[in-house]
Image (tube, rainbow, N blue to C red):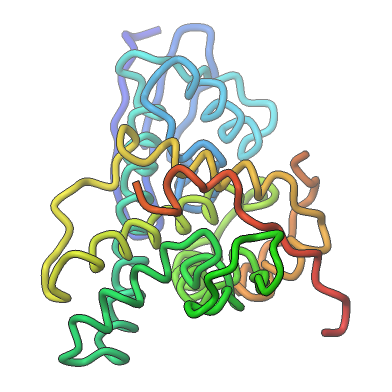
Length: 276
């Protein structure tokens, strides 16, 4: 057999491997590879490291049952393409979340920079509107567990998360494989919404963030939100899918501001009652 070689082409629906030849391996010709944007892999913060290899291999195996193509770490086309898609996905989420927050602030606080700043400060509270659909009122000064405190409700159901998730969910319509609950997507959107409020709390509405929505900067934030999402019941996930207009149903469930250091102490409301 000839030496290993490959050619990648890029189109509207993702990337194609036009030819792959590997000794003693499966010969793939004009096979469409997985678009990582359509998998909502729960490890969207992964570096291009050895830990990413089995994740991408799982995607390939599910798309092409019986294939013996092996994903490898160094200069391997499928892994390289997939990592680029992960980075692209993270960038798209950051852009969509920033736009949702910016549009809201522009429409609500036109020519009111102080009102904008105060809303952002409220949104970044542990019980604020960045995360919850029914946040604790900004006027509430009582602490959780003390008389007079009003607990928030609708975790990960805020206007900002829902709108950003609806934009991102549109990209999964052509998905070939369902990878279960979109934990990575929701956690990443929540982190991106938090980032947007951080930015607009201290900057003019027309100023773009200078920091990158990168793994090194936001992996711990995403991991913090993902920890809550992994504990959600299937009933709660069903409710979230409806809100996000997330059309694919899972085949198998997969088992420093206030929002900074206090993220792991967020209040988790009860699951929504069916019919309400």
